[in-house]
Length: 97
Image (tube, rainbow, N blue to C red; front, side, top):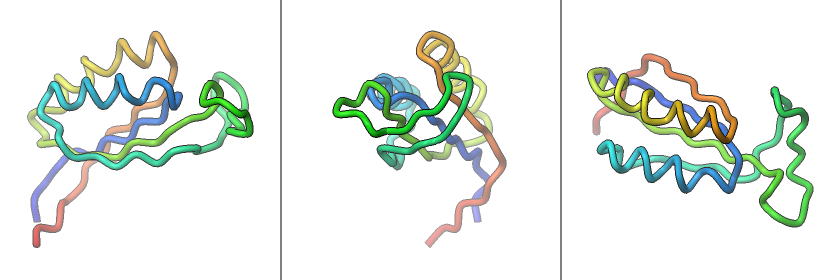
């Protein structure tokens, strides 16, 4: 197994392209995006019921080496501050196969 940092980001669907661009610019080439996630946060209820993606959220899951996490967090922080969202970082182990 390989020790990694797990990165989970929830933000507006329209902002997810900017988030993935930042990640890719910092060498994160693999990630999973789940669209139309719902919940309640500092911006209130995000129901995902609307016709456009304006009020919909997306969830992103990825990993990176522990030594890379500080630069990724500092790159993502301005996007989240400007556009809203949540970023969670945790320790994980990658099962190599």
